[in-house]
Image (cartoon, rainbow, N blue to C red):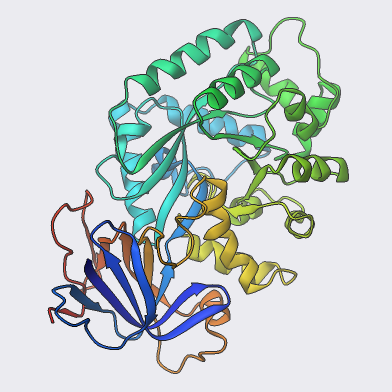
Length: 439
């Protein structure tokens, strides 16, 4: 039975499927029961009708990589001499925080995400409170619990602590557990191997930062450079440690990390062998355009990755290296910087490709019958061209005015310009939208 119908001037069901005078019907289950042209209320229907007027309905946006618990660091780490200097500053800032501060920061990040049209996030946390911090915010999250240690002798302890954290967590229908060994310069091959085994045994996703800097490549190949100095200064490099003398992707491959259930974050520096390994293993890559620019990296190999058939999703990274968590702004930034990418490729990277990377392919990332009704509503200026609407959106047209998760309005911009949140998915009827009526 149809519970609600959302109307708008347009619906962009897929990059190449734009509907005019569109209507999305949502069943009581929270899934899309029909999408097509508005033909008036169904006969004898008691469905709530929400008319968004001059707007476009999009699939909910997917932020495949972020650290919501670092949201409070926005604009605090903008001056640094090297990547490891930035990490040092990040560590010092985190050491000052209480668990309540981590929780407040994560919750703020979840709300900011919803208010910009994001409905699904791959959220990495190392505070121990990430799972609970935003549990009452109606944002779907794959919560990646981070493990880190260069000492092989501490691998068992790290995985045991991970297991306790996951086992003791309360159930949440909008959240899924996952695992994140931090990075090749901070994680031993033994911890990588055990993390992979743990995730595979439980059907969990695994994410790791990799190939992020040139210094990382030098450290793995030769054991020298700024990472060697940084780790020696921190006192965390095990006695007798020797570099694997492998590239970052080869290193992960040797530890059994690659595969369709793995997300490799950044991948800023890849050679052809690395790309071949990613393609062969069906491994997902997450590119964070504005964070990439923040650190001044060279041109990202996204074009080569896409041409190789590798699934590439988009992420915002944290507000420690970005100015917002908006995936709409991430897409617009990428559109302005990378003329070798089409609007359709960028749109997929922030919707269906992100859903696929986080194992929601087939139920999220498109407006399609049977998919979850996770949607973003963008208010449009008058006079937009129907034929080029996606390009105009990526050029800056359109503002998010509502975010819908599982058929319920999770966030809505008020007439006064502020936002109203529904801090848990309602079990009752749909709240009325800005322009709504009952038939």
